[in-house]
Image (cartoon, rainbow, N blue to C red; front, side, top):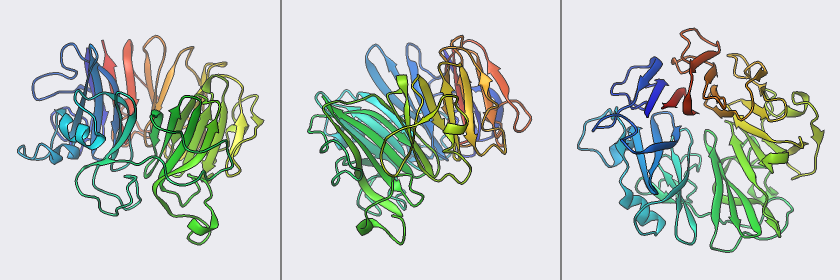
Length: 397
């Protein structure tokens, strides 16, 4: 098994051993050899603007690796840049989460300058933020400049913003989903038949809903300092998937028969799903959202100013929003069982047969075709594919 990377690499975030951008899939490395290490499987890769975070598993064990500037927090003995994948120490994360080793990771996500890690405890999940920059409250802590690089994120904060079915779920809870845009984030929290959607960070475009008057600065609330309860469910906890762009958010309720809640800026048409997806109909939902019922299985992913929908019925990927660099993808039919992952201004689609294709802005070679703005077949037979901030990773057998 081999992890390849391509794209932006000025801080060594690709983990390929140097700091040059690369436009062809290039093998990733650890200090000891190839990535992943023998016997390990890569489950997820996410990237910020200067770092990347990788989650891998082997026989029930979990490990996190990082590359780029994040590594300086624990690997200061090695001079920057940190250009290969370096193991993230478990002790600071377990201490912050209040759990005993071994570390178990449920989800990871990345914003522009921080990461989110869901730590699975024996009876409850804990959300951690990794980073030091907090000008937009993206760390989810009330402190403007919190100490250290690992922070526990308090999930329950205030009454629900939107009229909904109850209070925040009682502990213990599971965090079923977490997603980040550039400087805002959302998490979906479940406890039995109770559930809540929470959000924090940059909110000036309405990507976290329109706040009560007491929380506004002018017409809108500029930032949400700590995770705020947006909506709750009482008596039934639906499946929920999250996709966030720079200034917009998409909440996909029951992805198997999807209803989409579309929030935030529509300056580029990134919320205009109803005009692009056949059979879309108006739906009920939060008062701050444009709500669309699709009634069938979909996946949703967001670039900075684009929303992509993989329609399980038509087996096509449809995009709306900013398409100056081909980010919308051209309504490709990619077959059944495809997976779509969006980066900053590009995306990758992996078919059920393992064929991977990338499309969008190729500023740093992250699309891999050698020519800007064109769709590129990257490889066949891939086991996974991920897109980040002008970065792409492909896992091969």
